[in-house]
Amino acid sequence: MTKARDIADFKFEDIVDTGTEGTKVATGTTAQRGSTTGQIRFNTTTGLAEYYTGTAFKSIDAPPTISSLDVTEVDSQAGGNQTIVITGSGFASGATVSFVGASGTDFNASTVTVNSATQITAVAPKASFLNAQEPYGVKVTNVSGLANTLGSQINVDTSPSWQTASGSLGSILEDATGNHFTVSATDSDGDTVAYSLQSGSLAGLSLNSSTGVISGNPTDVSSDTTNSFTLRATANSKTADRAFSYITQNDTLSNGLVAHYLTGSGTDSSGNSYNGTNSGSNSGSISTSTNSGTPFGSRTVTSFPDSNGYIALSTSTIITGTNDRTITCWVNPNASLDGNDYIFGFGICSGGSKGTFNARCGSNKMGFMGCGGDYDDQGATIYSTGTWVRIFYTMSGTTVSTYYLDGSGNRVSNWSTSISGLSTQNGSGATASIGAHASNPNQGDAGGCNSKIADFRIYNRVLTEAEMERLYNF
Image (cartoon, rainbow, N blue to C red; front, side, top):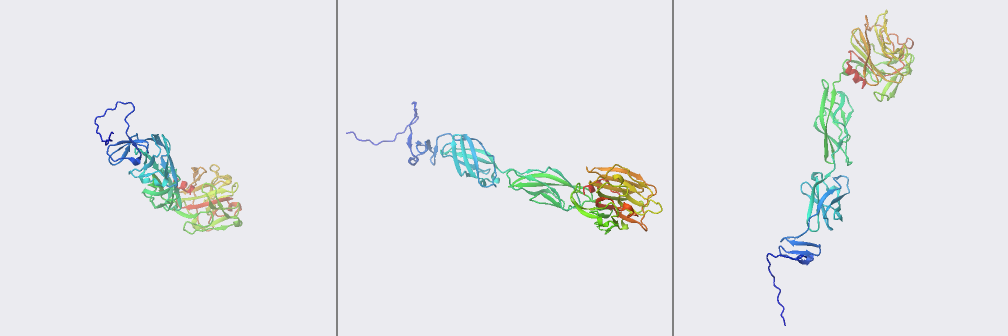
């Protein structure tokens, strides 16, 4: 009887296999793996050939490839999950997906669905993507242990986008208060945008970090001064900077201001306390109301009747002789104006002397009367019912000039003339009035201008063109 022999291990070197079917290697499950370094076997659990390195088994197959993702940005503040479709090749059932941050820190997708050998759908919490770790790469690892990474694919949020153009925001007077400018930026992810000063100075103003409103009282300047600064818009740690500037204008409009009747009523806001009183037999028809018409927006204005209703001012507001002056205000006729309608009057007419400084608006034109010498209707028609116009009467020596600012905001010279012998007087019987003829405010309808008036100012100097334009925008 033949005896069974022990099976011995054989050692082969330089084996040449000339067959066509290949060499059969050991076959078994994962649990049946051996522990010899260099062994080659077929794992029936994974369905892959594998070899042992001495510390781990490695499958013998090609790693997957990743060609693209359908998501390039994640809004980490939105909450919930982010679904990402990965396109490539060599994907196998059981593959895992991880996202690799810039520092190498990674986290795994919460769910992975291998749709095919060329597509995987991975889902991960949006909050797991961190701004500090962008851009993220994506790593696919097959059950064989072979993996591939496509780097720098996913950013976290976008930088906010500025809506306000860079450069000058405009101009403000040095004594201005309240809100002046508003800057705006938006975020495509819907994140809240916050604003901050990055460099430079707001020169006395403050920035609302939530609304982008720039407000306050600017630092006083000795001349018009451009102030430059850079603001930063931040949304979920992403930032965008933009350079801006604004001009602080030296406020000369308070220089030489004798009296100021902001609403056209008798209250003097200049600080000189030259308050006026409603006068004339129709003084009860003088009324104030809120007017929201252009160009100065909503404001309280005073309406005067067509006759015998005016505001009597202190004679201290009369600038005498041939001294420099400017009288200016907004005017809005209630109806067509006639030759006896007057916007203002200062001084006294005595013995035919040219001792008054009056503004007449006959035929809806700017006119001047110095008593004993009328200079009416010297320019184009500027007044029309229901329309606001800013008028300026100046005097330097014996030269009287009138100007107006029309609806387009342009400065227009109406006329200028030299009046021989003109010398405004302030003696017994002199009057100063808004809406009336000087000396005789109750004569006929000379004591009523049939108009609304606002921002009536008296200066003891001639305003510049720039100052006139500023007052137009006041």
